Length: 220
Figure 1 (spheres, rainbow, N blue to C red):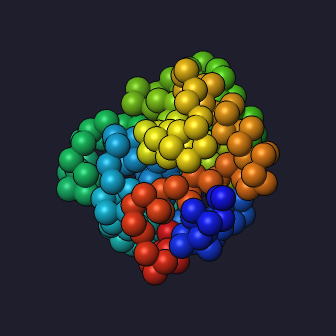
Figure 2: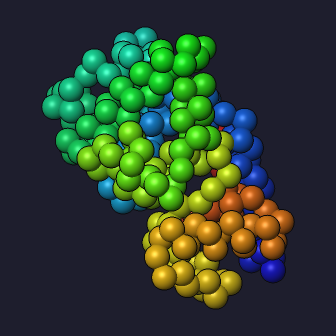
Figure 3: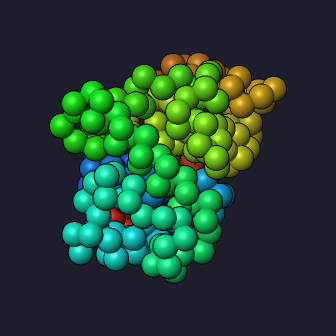
């Protein structure tokens, strides 16, 4: 049933799944992954708004060499005029910068080789059941959805209880959990039952519900 319902986007969803598992979202640039999650935290349309702005951030800051690490990004302020020209929302940039500071501290404290290693180190060890106690979970503007989305992009096979995923899962599989943590547990069970990763299920839903064509996925 899953393959039939999502056949038009299944190949693209599998590509997204592999990028997450292999640390290749945004070509493995951990700063861009954090910017992506931060922009997504305010409920913007992902393919029409978030993606173009992450690309603009890349062009303005990363491609120019101005920002190449969490350490570089941590030096900016949420009020930075150039950041606000990309997205005029202080909370977005506060989430991105504060998250970068936490992850840079992990990289230094654990003597890890790269920012991506720090992101994945955090993501694997983070516990969504205690997300509010987590150093990133405590950042103002980071809710459970953003917390889980960031872990997914770092390669952890989990899910996020956003409204699109919840709506489609209820419609397609009759799953209606009483709360968000219970929903994540239901997604774990669904994944085991149908034999596809939670990440792939989520990408398939996002792609189909967004009417995302097969073209253009290579940019993500």
